[in-house]
Length: 276
Image (tube, one colour):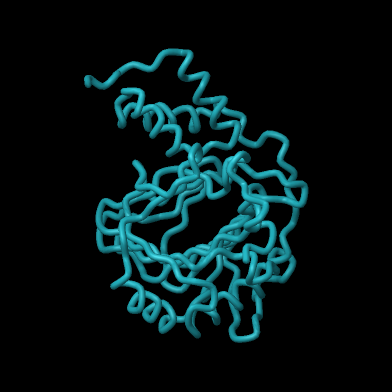
């Protein structure tokens, strides 16, 4: 089947409306590819719309000050001291230093590398777990309290964010080789795929860097103009859900391709309520 090279105005309007509804960018591109549109052209069109701010990404989202913002520039947990490197209020992003020790980073990598599989996403239409265009990495997930190190990290994240441990999904480990990336996406679910019986909507992400990356691999928030370089032991926390049940489209983010070396991260997704 010959791929379509031009995108009509009607499709542009559909892209805008679908993004505004909260559907993830990679799901939109997957749908376009299934309809016969060229993959590269689809991504290019999508990112041009975002960069040109043709889409009103902020909507009526009401920003609230998270608890972690109220704790100063040095945050003490029961087992460590963590430095705040930077804060952004709209969208809510905080960059942290020494969220994990070097030994904790090394141990997470060592105990995860034999369990890696090609990364997947949740299809926003069917709810099925599948391989996805735009996400090239390897990953695995731990069960809650699976081992002492995971339990220790889960407790630290709960103390930092003020969300109970049981609101967090299992800790996920991701490994990106050269050229691997995760194109622009939202971490929250489309409204029609939120399961109130399993914690409801995702409201925040705690992303930890397990190694230094020689080149590439930054976490980029394109609407906010923010790029975070991976640094071993550091973390970025971003919150995109509020007490009114809204989600923040300004939290759109990507992991750009690794150019040299590799990238290891650990991710904890946090939901509105108790998952378990």
